[in-house]
Amino acid sequence: MTSESLQRLNDAVIGCIDVGRDEGWFVLDLRSGCSSYGVRAEDYRESLGTYLRADRLCVIGIEAAGFLPRERDYKHLSRARVGETDFGQSRPWSVHAGKAATWRALPLVPALLRDLRQFVPSETLGHLDFARASCQLIRLLLFEAFVTRAPRGQTAPLVPDCVSNACAHVWDAAIAVLRLRSQLVDAQIVSAIRDEVSVSFFGAALLATGWSTESTLASYPVHVVRDFKPARGAPFGG
Image (cartoon, helix red, strand yellow):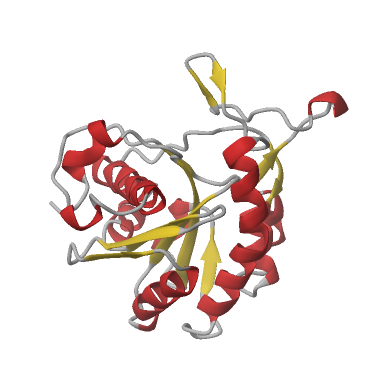
């Protein structure tokens, strides 16, 4: 990744929405340190729209599977992706919380991207590759958050006070944002799940909503952020 891409990413707005039967979102402006949160997808859209109108780069996450793994064995089409296993226990995208988030995200992500498109000029682009951030036409980058039930005891010191008593969905969204912020600060932008991509749901959604005409996005890798593990213990907004 070039220094230009990294510099622009560290001046971006990072947001994440945790979806399922309920929702919760968190947005952080890396330039000012200001943050906001809520529990309605419509408010998440409006918060991001404010920054897009101001010509800011927005890096937005969705707590749902952004891509399906490539599996050649029909008996294992729903297997866990590489990186979805914790201490020998599998947490695949296809069961339990992952399934609930996926069915909610299927209609939500295209609707959100469609609405965000109205806040930017027609030539504006969206992508999945953070290394493309140096391109000034790119104003939207997507990532997948995989932080369900993030431990509050470990992460509480790094979460802003305003979120400390919020619902679990807001908390998880905040943890995903802070985890990505940590990666940017340390210049260690490595996806937590690296697997062969069969279909990139997020990439297809970008294509369907006019954010790109790059057909390879339909099978493009998605950056995945996992539970927060502070590398330096930097305070929130610091």
